[in-house]
Length: 459
Ligand code: UD1
Ligand code: CA
Image (cartoon, rainbow, N blue to C red):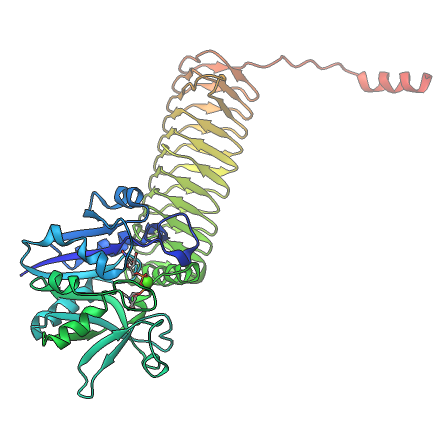
């Protein structure tokens, strides 16, 4: 049977105290709504519809590649929000999941369980519920004496007796398409908030003798609804814990999970060790047998097997195998560092290629450069890539030796196997196999110090 999902994401999220729509706040590097979309995809939905409203353009920009978007221009409540998807689903035959864009921890596995239960019981509606020690803020699930779900009451509308119930509505449901929109049209905003509550549909179904089922979620952490910044931080912590656990399950050592931050799209190979205060972000991919950290930030970085990166930052760049980076290296976007390369302390690399086995061990700036294999770049070498208007390329061919404290004024090429004397300012190409020295010649004046002292004594 076909399955659709409607994700409610139109609310402003007043309690976030933010200009940004709530569902675009990030958890583990991804907007909350993107996590919900992923869960729906994992559950195998055939159709995916996002209800956007507050910040419609911004939300659409984030989700449109993945889902159909409908607009809820005025946020009149969750029932009203689901109704906006009607035009998309009038001819849809099957079941419809209703999800909230603010529950980023929900898994596809849970949704599959919910749908299977819904179909097995042949219910018209199935509510995903959870038992919480502190149910404050959530809708409570009220049951009759035989244990059947009777209705859901919101925090703001409940009597003290009703609010003592600890079973909550997670805000996730599965409905048969048939009859859903008709029932939604019957809902009225008679409650404390003056909103059209989706939760009211449960009582309508029960009175109309349409079967309502419930599915109790084992891990209540999954349905943490993010309404404020504290819950956002809590969701981040739980998501991080989940990501780190799955890395550890595939053989990654995480020395201190409490101080290790790995985003949702990151992969790490077996026997890699991640030391504390490390941040692995975006689409970062780390190979096997690597050592990452301490205090390292990798953003969309690709690191080959057996490499070490400590106390360093690598952004939008690739590093080969058995490389040794840091401490205190900054590799900026567009760089490609080869196998067995050593980049050392206080070195900045920008949009440069560094060939296999080359070394830039200390105190250098390498920008817009193409460095071949087996090159040694001496301490303090600077590529002068910018003339105040344009950026120029420095080419250093295979096997070159650059003496310490060299300036390479681009555009310039140092030919294969050449040597550059320390302290040179190179402004012209260096032919292969030659020695270039470009610095003032040294003068020694013997006995100068004694003469100077005599002068001073005479004064
Ligand atoms: C809702 C449920 C509550 C449940 C809780 C679970 C209702 C009336 N209450 O409460 O029973 O325990 O979720 O987290 O449904 N939204 C729209 N358009 C609107 C209103 C809301 O798209 O007009 C979206 C919001 O962006 C949000 C979601 O629906 O993603 C839930 O809305 P929210 O205001 O957070 O509902 P809760 O008060 O948390
Ligand atoms: Ca909520």
